Image (cartoon, rainbow, N blue to C red; front, side, top):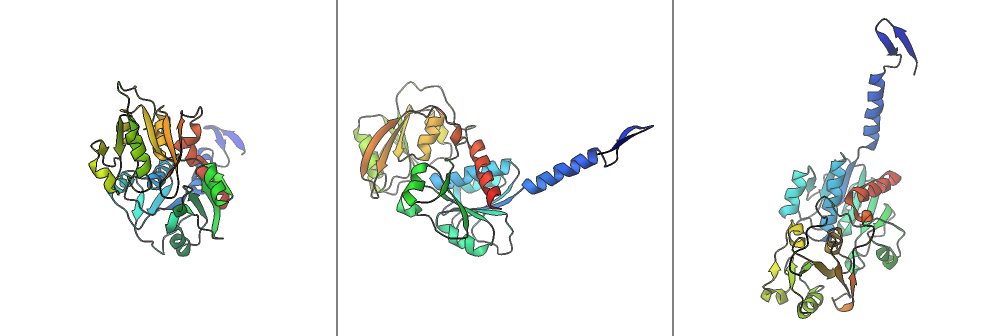
Length: 299
């Protein structure tokens, strides 16, 4: 960039500040993305919908435009998405334009058939309901832990579940011990929940009840967005596999009882885990950057 002197001082032949502003504008244009994220059911507070919301929220905070597609949208998730500037739709507009699609679960084929844009796919668990779609239109897979990629024999980027450390962080320890079990009470979790009840521990259950076994529980609470309010009362968490609540508990400095269960919820093993020494891999602000690197690699 050439400069010359004049009576008004030094001037740049290529426009000085204007040129810098133009370059910055071009960087923003190249970096900015319109992202479509799929979700089976964006109306209740379980692992995959919360993964989708947390990722979408971080993308919005970085300035990207995000639309969540799900046949079922509602509840507090729809409310929180709207507050964050995230668009939610229950049908796909064939005229809409996106730079990348992030697929999850069975909504994936509908999205692939609707748009000819690069697609990545996240696999959330080892259970048959998460058997990933194999389709040549999917450019890359993401698995939220190594065992999932191994289970399905998929060449996947390992990018862990995003946890918002602005919400989940160590709190003062409560006076009484309490084990917090968060998750839908259904056939998959019934045996683990029963085992926890019979252990003699003081415990609390939070989640939807899809199993009549839970009808008699007097220590059950309905699903809640502000799960950190329950974590503040807890001294440890319990749940099946390495679920989201275990990770949120780890972020709060709480140990976890993890039930490894089979297809019908039968307990295969029970292990107790302390929070990992390095929780940074679960920080949603780091996770979104890793996901963006994947997006950029397929565009």
